[in-house]
Length: 201
Ligand SMILES: [Zn+2]
Ligand SMILES: [Zn+2]
Image (cartoon, helix red, strand yellow):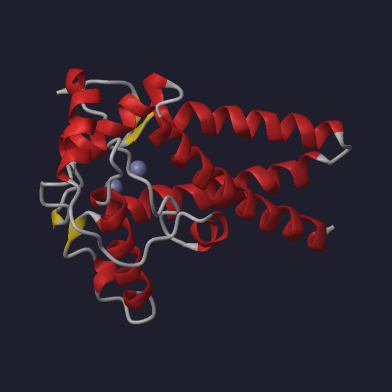
């Protein structure tokens, strides 16, 4: 029973990492306009490519004045809740017991909360404890550097096109969106992004 729960929890973590990566790509694709619009509040209004991206705390949430769970906006919450419900239904339909399904879902939510929500916000906070943590500071410095590239490297259409995994680069490396070094700033790309989302300012 215990190994089964551990396997379910590990699978939940893996699912959360892959699903979070593809959801983040969806948020940047403008395929579902309200999802991208809300994500662009973070990327263009509050932590824009030309604004300081690492500042003394607290983290500046993009959910002020709109629905959200703390600093997590509906653009993340709605797809995550839908995915969790779908996973629960699928696991139960496949005969998984409730404890197994709960281990999968619980681990998935915990992984997302830490590695997509907490670590993301931490990358924007100057002086956060992770900068000094002996075993974590090297990983965190890399994570922050890659996330800053996610904010500042735009294509000609104004889309942020790299580094969608927040804490780990595995999916970016697997699916061809990994970027290790900065490129010259794309001014016309930023103008295109600001034109597309001018109504959110
Ligand atoms: Zn993003
Ligand atoms: Zn960010």
